[in-house]
Image (tube, rainbow, N blue to C red; front, side, top):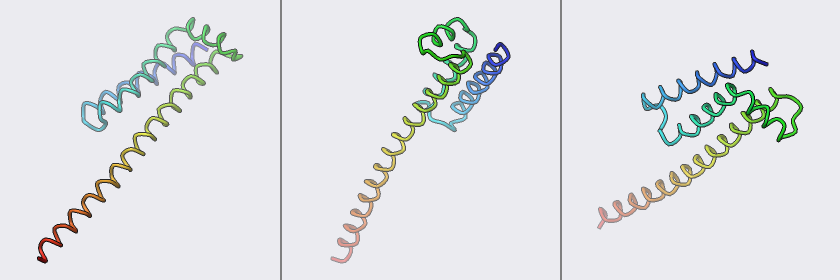
Length: 115
């Protein structure tokens, strides 16, 4: 299990670095990076605190500690995917509303230029 926790630690640190570099280079907006930072920091913390992970395993009733780690990771990423789906839905709605406003303005400009 120690090998698995070490691999998880390395992957969490890599994810943290990637997110921070992406924010610094403006590849990702800071408000969207918060979720990634929280998830990777949580995975890093859990991989370095086996006693907490063991307590979560007992609370959840799962048979194996590594399974608990990956179930928590999967749950975190599922929540993140849902959050980004909501954001995309709002952006799509805003895009439709903006296209409608542009069409109305174009119509008004064409109507005023004919008169």
